[in-house]
Amino acid sequence: MFSRHVTRDISAYCQGELPPEGARRFAEHIISCAKCRREFEEIKLGIRLAEHLPLVGAPDSVWTGIEASLGSEGTRSARVNRWWQGRVAAVAAVLLVVGGLGVWWFWTKGFKNDLKRASWEVQRLNGAPRIGEKRIGAQGQLGVGEWLETDGNSRAQIAVSSIGRVNIDENTRVRLVETEPTEHRLELARGKLSATIWAPPRLFFVDTPSAVAADLGCAYTLEVKDDGAGVLRVTAGWVALELKGRESMVPAEAACETRPGVGPGTPYFEDAAPSFLKALEVVDFGNDAAAKTSALDVMLRQVRARDTLTLWHLLARVD
Image 1 (tube, rainbow, N blue to C red):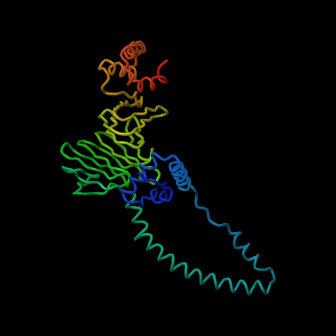
Image 2: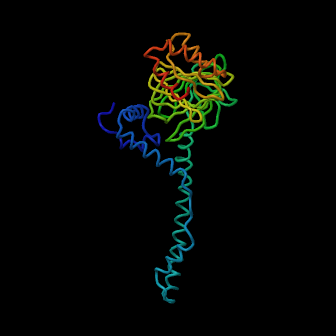
Image 3: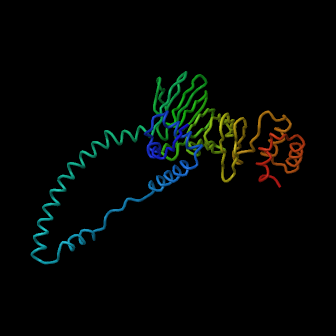
């Protein structure tokens, strides 16, 4: 943990310029330091706004204003015009050369770096994982929009920019949706992944068919079945499961199920009584009102102090 504030490193962190260890220490400090976190959020918002600014060309009136400011006398204007045209031609030639060099630099340095930042490194753990239709060797690059797939005998690990890592289990299909300084996002279509993230809150997201997992500085596993239903298990920190205004906050040692068309269910601790958990499933995803009322009565009779997490979420979900 840093003993001093890290505001001077915010820009480098947002641009992915910090080394992995530095990025981890930065993220740990941001999580616990309100001052640095506020400045980080302000800069992140500024980056998002700047990404949506349109490029606007200078109006023709600019040249008219420049000429007018040089004087309106005819002879002087003619001399100035000739002088100005010569200078413009010279400047244009210089700009042409500089522009050519700029294009070369942009391609060899800037664009290649952008391409590198727009992809994540994938390491094969065993078997033959594929990116698209191509099997990867020891390592590969997962670009934005590309799918990584494993079969029943293969596993892989993804380096999530400089903010963490994700292990991909067997029979799993994931896609890199976006990687930007302000947001990193995967899509889990099916299978199971295990994520360890040391980023500030809400920088890493995983889309599933029935919810979006928003990292709050944590470690967790997320599994999606063939029918789109999922289950989240958090081992450290917190994860928010969200879908269309419905949100579940899941802490360490807790779990939460999701269903297509419903979204996240209610978080629970898996050491609760089996009858409590069975009743919770009816309350969350059942269709019969009478059965849901009866199941809620079962839960209230068996609730422990530890299960306050579940009851707190139910306050807004039952009458």
